[in-house]
Length: 357
Image (cartoon, rainbow, N blue to C red; front, side):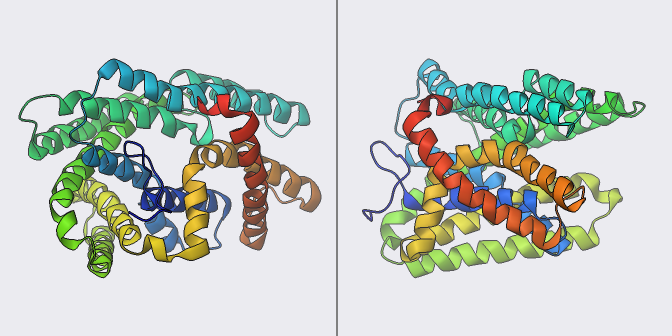
């Protein structure tokens, strides 16, 4: 194990895990800011891995610690500290910013009331939805994994059937509603759907990680081979995605949903394997990704509803443009990433309670 490798497995951290998380959160931030700067095809393809990459890292780590005994109570307490407490603190902070935006005339009352509602149903303000989804998805994984003779086939069939059923229930309930009532009803249903997807992808990666460990010792010195496998996975996911986009229509909706889910798992898994193979060779780029992987929570919680809104407000007041677009959006992204660094340093030194530490 390289000395630079850092994400906790017991007392160690794995650098390729943090690099993967760093890539995902930077991609999320970039795609939130940019508006038409990149081709739509590229945006949609990046969007397939930038969230699910986090589920893949969680499942991978569970596979590494398969021999550990899991106490449900201790697990819930630990995850509540690392995910639940940040959700509560940052929700309060973002609601305070909503009040500030309201006083500036940047938003109206319905936006503030909407965000209060989303906070209580765990839909979350901005990107905060991810925290309860990851918490509940991983908790569901832990419960189901304790069932004897749990099989990958059983989880896949059950999980996907529930996703499809929930989707049909959502369509049935909200079909005759208009906004904002449709969004109000959809919010908790969206949380449940995302939890199921998180559970499925964590479980798939867990099984893959278990089998990977049996091969790891044989190929541990063949990082080039690992990278090739990662590239193959990425190519396969791209081919499947192009086929799904071009060939499958509404008549094959269920198959399309399953393939999209499969692609959003294979693609980040391939990228993770690339980092396993060449992560230690990336130099300053690898260190940059590693840093934001370790501080992904700070960047995820603050970039969208704080800094991006501030950039939109400045852009509207100075240039009379209601949205960020083109080079303006890229400049706003770069400025935000620069500002986020000292903010993350400060939070890690003075505001660790925000992170549940």
